[in-house]
Image (cartoon, rainbow, N blue to C red; front, top):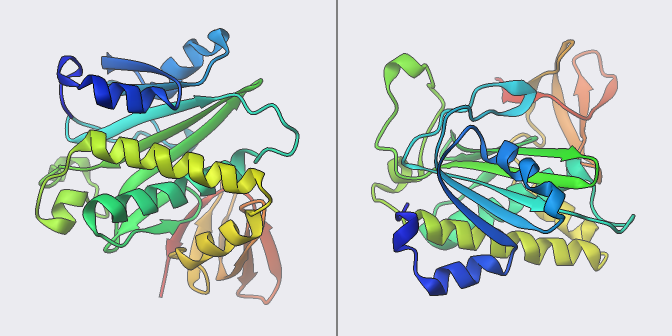
Length: 254
């Protein structure tokens, strides 16, 4: 990412369309920082060069370095008809897919509920959280990593550079992700949720596949037969029973 002092006024103005922009060198996590400024009650984009304690869902550690694009979007959605958190996670995933393809030409897929996959490698994690009326959408995208140290034990991790064999400008990806997300949010507010759900399903890496889904309490194995309007997976288990799962971690199995 360009140093904050080198970001052009034009780019800052483009980013400011989405909220107050915070450009940070180091922060514990961009999600935490976004919540810390929520009392201003104004949308914000929090962008950090480094995170000391980045995290994923269920408080899992998320690896991030200077080759990552790590940012959070702070929103306040007041209309009762606005999308809820599970839907927003899916919409962010769709926006990331569109942005990655626009900037890199790589085909991206969504692995429910919050991973983005390129060429069977995880390149992005999404963490959406809510505290009272504040909603924070956190994105960690592996952009320019040439590889990952073996000691990190991340066999499925990948980056856009590894897939395309070239580097990309992270701020261009940031602008594209935000542009696509607000375009999708406008569509959702204009009663296009069924169409968006169809687009999400078309990019799913698990729909109609046999998977293992681990939740906090148990492990499910079966075939994903649907993803519903609330972003939940409908799983036909090995016993033939249909189970609806709202949160978990999915992995494809043979």
